[in-house]
Image 1: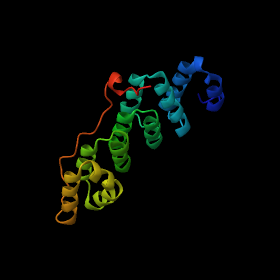
Image 2: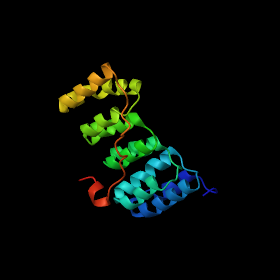
Image 3: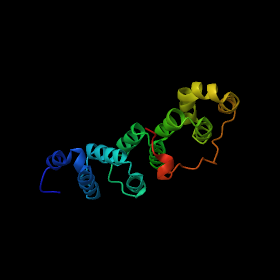
Image 4: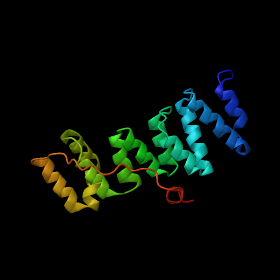
Length: 176
């Protein structure tokens, strides 16, 4: 690292038999802060292909901020690791992505509604415009109640739902 272009090394490790070497190299790039969003995508894809939830957890929860968060969320969602994507979105204040994951990926409409109720008025209205039709379909009474609050004397609730954290590897593996 630092002497040879990363693309040269990556090309050498791209076959399936060297995925562990590629993973180690990409981890080192991230640790040294030399990784791009493409390197993050490739590393997360390696973890998901290897079904190495422990390393994925460590990478995401490890406190390193040597990666592009939006890229990590996108890759986790694509690979079916929705709890990991939700954790990242919540941890980094990506409220739109957090709601999208709750509604579209995890389909936990009650949690989405609770989360919207904690947002400032303008954000809550914006999110209800976007997700309201699906929420009214799934939870008509609760959604109607929140809409009535928004139209009268809305005050954001302070009891925000707990931020999701990646669950154990058995619970979190996508099914084939």
